[in-house]
Length: 461
Image (cartoon, rainbow, N blue to C red; front, top):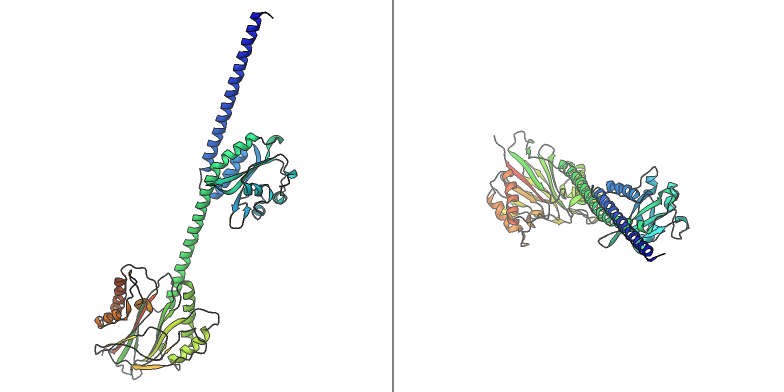
């Protein structure tokens, strides 16, 4: 070979080498562009929905397509139980698959979740980490697989695996890199979807609970008499006196433990009761319902208030119960003004005398209902003259607190009652609640409020 030929050969080789380098660069650029487009495609898919179930379907479909695999699955981490689970499984045996739980470290997916490392396996059945739990349930043979961790904010929230590369090929190291790349946007979208799903479930549960509480409120209020009750003295044939009673209640929550009742006994007597269960919310409402049912069911024309409370207490008392109720009940003879009453640890009522005096009603107190099994409640007696008014209330009035943690107290209550002594019953109830609200000046109501008024007045001829 002469010198010229050698030079030409070297030049040709250089051109070929340059072309090969250029081709490699072009192929590499095309592959990188293809990879970038695939990542972009994944990002578009996984960010097209915030709903977890829809997102899981998109993740599995997109992963299978990009990785040219027969199937894909997402297995999530249950941190509380230290397990992996299939939140979504497609196919006829999806329900069976969702029942499967893997311990962290169990099987190939469990190993990836435990170590945070990706794994590529050409023959799954020969790998010592292989678990056939899922394969046996779905009767699906797994040959090759890729499994990568789904990591969001430094925490493993699940694993993504693709199964059986098509055409019988094996997954490559480049496939591992690609799956790891698409796992990152998938993990971020999945965590957002999981948070949104948890929020939706919490919101739905809250709305359902609020709906149930509204129903419970309606049921509870349905137990209480509405409006005022007039009981004239018709025993003598020409009534000279009338008893009128009315009440107001405002629970601190949707349902509460304060309660009241009033009804006629015979032709000339008025029975009334006001109580306060020791708790609030649903437990107090249930105890209150039982107490009211027993009071109304056991009260007879021959029974005194003390005898009634004794009988009801025996029914309510339970060794293991922490619930109890303070209570005040009375039986007023409208014609004579004789008031028999029994007090189970309740707030002291006030009598507004027609003379203008305001006095606390004294008497022998018993324990609240439900505290002691053999408690015998005593009867007390006082006379209401024509024009006298009796005020019952719960401690939601006197113990109401303002933002400085000061209590409304008995002094303020007595001053208000003295000032509103001549007010109509409806106005008096409104003013009592208004004055408490003004005192608390926006502080959250911490206890149920209930008030009951009984007037004995001359009948209009």
